[in-house]
Length: 523
Ligand SMILES: [Fe+2]
Ligand SMILES: [Fe+2]
Image 1 (tube, rainbow, N blue to C red):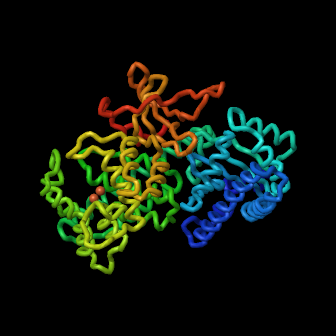
Image 2: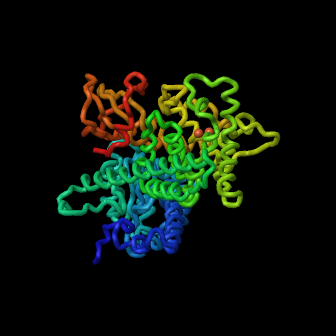
């Protein structure tokens, strides 16, 4: 089967990455290579645009990026075009999410901002793009950001007869492709529109995510029961569930974050632990954890409160505030967790990271506050710092026995930012805010149309951080509606935003079960 030059490589069936099984060793090597080359491509494109902006397209400062981009496009695409696109603040090489490290983060952010500023969602580079890159960069930086910037650039590119570099419009969230999921099966194949197919794929992915979330909860319960009764603990089931969540996370971080609203108040500890695992993995993904590291931090987070099985239920479920004695008992749970882990499998078989997470998750970043109180300095490991952030965020946004009303997520983020550098690692906390969005999933909002809506996908683009995807659940008169999703970045024909958040609504006013809306399939 041949394909035209217009089809960007890596989104097509025949690409190398599809031929090599993703879980095979060869697949891993291809993964690493693509990731490395993709990151280099983003880096050089960023330099190209920056240098064109400060020196003009013909300056020698552009020699190196032009040459490098040319080589990278050849290496990545051979004789096919290569596409880079941005979706929800993430950069994709074809259908592959390019995970960035903390080191790459500013470069990625600058690249994403450059595309967003002209309203582009991505760009496609043909193998012979190098010859046109200077003129492309000149045109790109000469157009001022604003309405119709994309159209104006495209027009100028057409006038200059530049066809080797093209800019793509952003894809709407509902129209996004789900790699490996997007094929409609059965008799209806071919009858579905691309939007319906993508929506069906997304619904399927959300279903798988809910299944994995529930299995992680069940596995946790079993381990807890065995730990309480001194039985032999097996982490096999939990590992499998966490692995499933990692797989889904790498495809669609928002679906996984949406799981954290699946909480029911009577099984606080179970939901809390699975949520902490989900949030820790989402943060780990943001800061460039590998797949194996994500599974590790997820498993450690799932069992961070294992020691609570040694705390009497009368204390654990006590309504109202804890007294000094209750706190004394509660504060034993990090060390109790380590003992449980050691007890059950023998020291040599306890994954060190699980024990570290249990022991360190209340120690705090500054080593001055928190518990257990130690007679020596004990800096938290990176994964424990990740888990501490996820733990606090989930605890404060959930309804607990002794504090029935959860705080709205943005208020929790504000509170936590006030403790950056003391309780929390400031750099990680910044990444966490970008990860969950300044208006996170599950936040109830009032729109300027008078409609009431729930955030279902955080806005992760810095420039449009207050424009998440929302699910409208009631009209201006307060009458419940069949929920519909709207991307708050959408504009009308005149370029005016169709809807804007006026204020966040405290859910204690409405007592809406967010899980009913957020965890349900997107319509
Ligand atoms: Fe804890
Ligand atoms: Fe916890």
